[in-house]
Length: 147
Image (cartoon, rainbow, N blue to C red; front, side, top):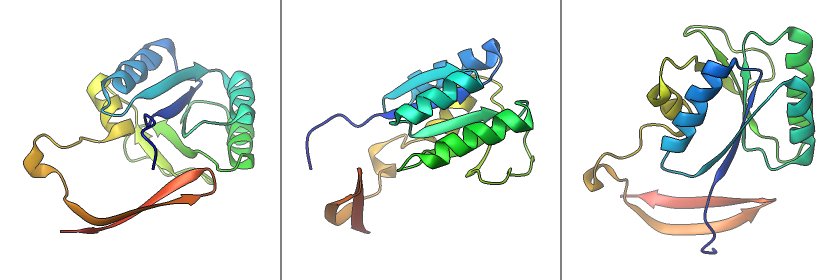
């Protein structure tokens, strides 16, 4: 294991500027550094071809053809990023995506969608033992026992 800083690269596709601001602010509040980018569908496909994207969030209002072409570009890269659609709560998961994230009402909602709630105190931190790291392609796999 190295001492390199762990960060995530999030690509937001075709969101309206007010939603871009919420996602950007939410990403900035996450406990893990998140490199945030917002693009239209054409620029998103180019960014995906370049690699290094960990999470791709598509606006549900993106037309079906653009949505399909962005998903295809994301799935073509190995390792492929997680692909989510930002849609109204209760929406069905579109084919070939990993899930649906509710449209954030504020930056806190966006942070929770991207990075979860995190531990509020040391007492909430999960204790791990027998921790092992191994390479899995370009990624690292952590295995451990939970106390």
